Length: 371
Ligand code: IPM
Ligand code: MN
Image (tube, rainbow, N blue to C red; front, side, top):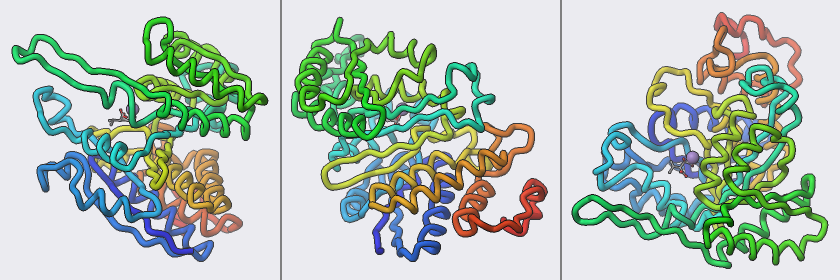
């Protein structure tokens, strides 16, 4: 099949990791006889440097015309350290999410058996943990009215949600729960926030349409604690924008590294796939960034396009790389592979999953016949 894929490498390690995801997509195209046309576009600090605009009009057009978007990372320390900057890289991503109506952000988290002993959390706590976080992505405090008083002494960020905004993502989260272990946890702060009370009321109503799904409610502070105490209790987590941002970074510890967590941001017409990690500026250009979150985002992209088997082939290759310890230094500090070599291994494994003549042992010495 033919698909148009927009690629936004973005800032920092974004270009390095998306290049590996592209290798995986190309391997899939070869192996399964598909044809992907890639169009690169700019967003973030690099776009500000080139055009003054973190989301150039051309980027938006390319994304709108695509079947799916693969995005790397955004952010640059020169803006992080300057709270007075009027134009910020992150505005590019936020505007893109809003303009394309990508309201539903899905962040799957699971404990990879191969990595459990890398985690700072105990094996018995995380082994078997497997959840999917549904984060609302185009509303809440991220997009409320912002204000800074003229004298610079008072600032505010408004937070609002409508029943419609809650309803559309809640249905998707319930449907996902039906396909999984049939449990949905709404994470909110309904003891304090009016918006959270609207979430609870709306989700309670919608739950009646899904009698096979067990629903529970957790305040976000308790949820943050439960995530570390007993992550296995979670199946589908549904939550608002800011809580989802925070809790998904926390949940990434269960997966062994934030460098493993992929996400899908889905709207009515478009869908974007990106790692949950940031631009990791300290690692830029060093070949040490873990490309697996980007590669797994490419798998989510394929699944979205209906290419299930193809997506699974990427996931199997990722599992294999973890099993063999062919990983970047975050996962294998003793004998790390570079970002690009991990990408080469994944692509090669997709193309030759049955090849028994692989010379895996020599990979570290860079002598392998397969990479
Ligand atoms: C994420 C990121 C973004 C967010 C930033 C870069 C705006 O942290 O995708 O989780 O806060 O949504
Ligand atoms: Mn985040």
